[in-house]
Figure 1 (cartoon, protein in one colour):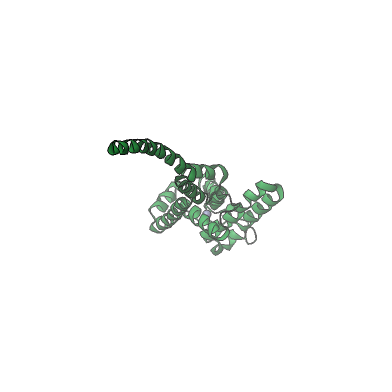
Figure 2: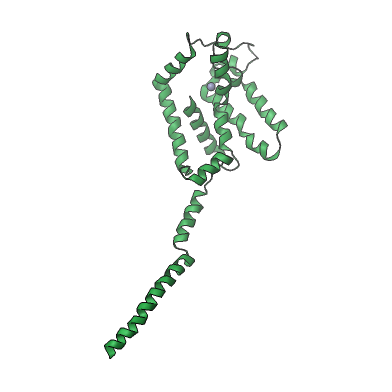
Length: 219
Ligand SMILES: [Zn+2]
């Protein structure tokens, strides 16, 4: 469930931590990271062996290793950028409801092997089944709606703001000052002055004609 995970995770982090100093590209990555790791391994590459899409990436140990790895190996700006990754991954586990599966969540405390979740003959079958599942579809739509809402709120239809997000992961409220500056530009004394001066030039020529016509009237 890509949209469900990315949408809900981004919304949760937005509501709790805001936009400052959060790289939302890392948030989106962390939101699907457990599936990015486990699904290909457990459902495609080694399906016969694992028969589940929830492996190491869906364990608390993975989140802790991620957290420690980032804290111990990264410094400064890079560390600040990546600190949100384990948090987003942890939210993924919560959204998956992994607590109802303690063997996976606390792996390898209770068992060194992961509980299997056989899906029949072929992983594609699971994908097709998920696509036609109304509950899954509903959740994906909720996630998509949240993403669309954030897209709108942060003005990502604007090219410069979108570029800012793609390059720096930043969701800024810069749209407001920019909108103000656009308004300001319109009502800027300088802009008006220029318009006025050209208007004045016209007025002056008319004014020049004015006295002339007045003179004609007078004459
Ligand atoms: Zn998952």
